[in-house]
Length: 188
Image (cartoon, rainbow, N blue to C red; front, side, top):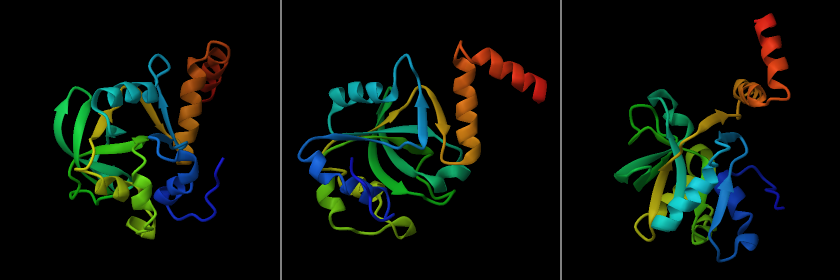
C-alpha cells in the first residue's frame, strides 16, 4: 500500500507508487468509477486489447458534451472495433472545445515510462499533477489506444451516483434483490 501524503492530483498519486511499479507496465483503477460487467470485467477486456496492440490502453465511454469538463478526453485517430488510436489527450476541456466525447472512465493500463514524466511534477488543470497530461506526452513514443468499454458504468464520485450503484447492484442479487425491489415499489 502506498499513501499519497498530499492531494496533488491523480498523476502525483500514481507517481507515489513508482517504487512498487518499477520497470513494469501497471494498472490504475479509480475506485469512484464502478465498471460493471461480471461476465467480462473491464480490466480483462483491456488486457486482451493490450495484448493485441501493446502500449498504453485506457478505458473510455462516450459522455454528453456538457460533461467533457469533468474528464480526460481523447482526440481520436483510427478505430478498429472497440480500439481507437489516441492522437491527443486533454484534461477537462470546456464543452464545445473537446476533441471528442470519449472520456477516460477510471481504468488505465500504463507503460512505466510515465513515471519519468510524472517525476517532473508539472501542474495542469486545477493546479494538479495530471495523469492525463503525462500520458499525452507519451503519444508518438509507444502505442496508445482508447478501449471503448462494453458494460455498465456508475460514477460513484458523487452521492447520487454512489446510491444508484448500490441500488442497481442490490437489485441484481437474488438474495436481497426482491426485498430491495419491494421496498422501492412501496416507498416511491
